[in-house]
Image (cartoon, rainbow, N blue to C red; front, top):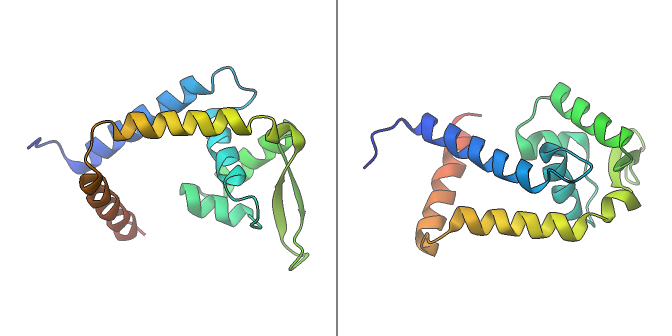
Amino acid sequence: MNSSPIYRQINILANRQRRHFDRLTAEAPFSGAQGRVLHYLLDHPDEEIFQKDIEEEFGLRPSTATTLLQSMERKGLLRREPSEKDARYKKLTLTPEAEKHRGALFAEMSQLTEKLAGSIAPDDLKTWQKVTEQMIKNLK
C-alpha cells in the first residue's frame, strides 16, 4: 500500500483531472472550470439552478462563483433570470450559445470519466465513492 498521505493523493488526482479536462476544452470558447459548470447546467435542464447550487456542487466560495459566473455571462453562455418560484432569486439559464457545446461537453466528460475509471472494478468504484463522500462530509 502506498504510504503517501491521503491529502497528497487527492491533490494529485484533482490536479491531473483538472489538467486533463482543460486540455479537452482547450479549443472551446470557455475555460475548463466554465466547461464543468456548463456541463452541470446542461445535465440538469429541468431544474432551477442558482449560484448557491454551483457553490455547493463545486465547493466554491461565493466570490469565486460570482467571478466565474460573471465571466460566463460576459461570454454569452448564460443569463441570470428571476426565478419562477421566487423573483428575489436569480436562476442560471443557458443561452443558445452554450447549448451549441452540449454534444462536445458530454463527450469530453464521458471520455474523462472512462479514463479515470479505467480498469477499476465496479465494486471498488462504489467503495471509493462512498469513502470520498464521507471525506467531503468530514471536512464540512
